[in-house]
Image 1 (cartoon, rainbow, N blue to C red):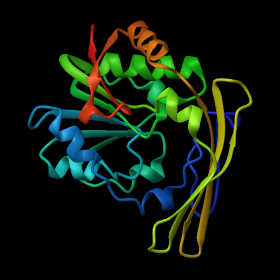
Image 2: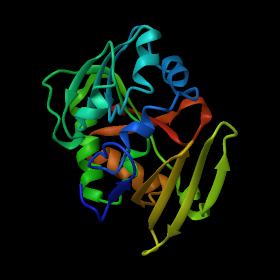
Image 3: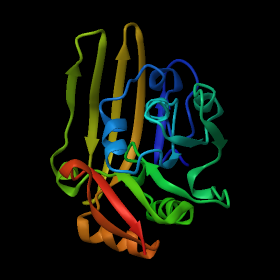
Length: 227
């Protein structure tokens, strides 16, 4: 990970991809665990890539899933309880075993680095069982075309802002987020690549995966099957 792709500032530890551990530890699920749970078999084993501080992990455990949580930040993993944890960059992971579900959320797959994106998908493919599925959270091209600076006041002392949204190239978005919780403030810079359905399907195919619809009809949630 390089500053060209990610960066972050604020109190507490900052991960290599610019995420603030103390901020992520304040977040709660917004229906994602139930969406995933409803799309997979009861008790399915789940490999959660980029698990962070366990925002989704803990709910998946409560829903009856066995979860292996992967993150490259030891400070993030230290917040997780009840799951097996593995410290590793996603692109380097090689556990030598497969899972019913491989889950990659938080739009990590939208990295601007095409080779890193391919490496993420290869990790998903080598860890999914032959009759399993991969679930990816991915911003559609329309989001990239329309997104711009905004401010959202959550009404509980929390404010989320996108303070910068530049397009240094036609398919690249350079954005800076600002997160405020009480008197604490963090920023997160990221470079994201616009990939339409055809391009994304091609990347999946390269990795040995095929798109198999969306979760709940939401275009941001892609289900893929091993070829």
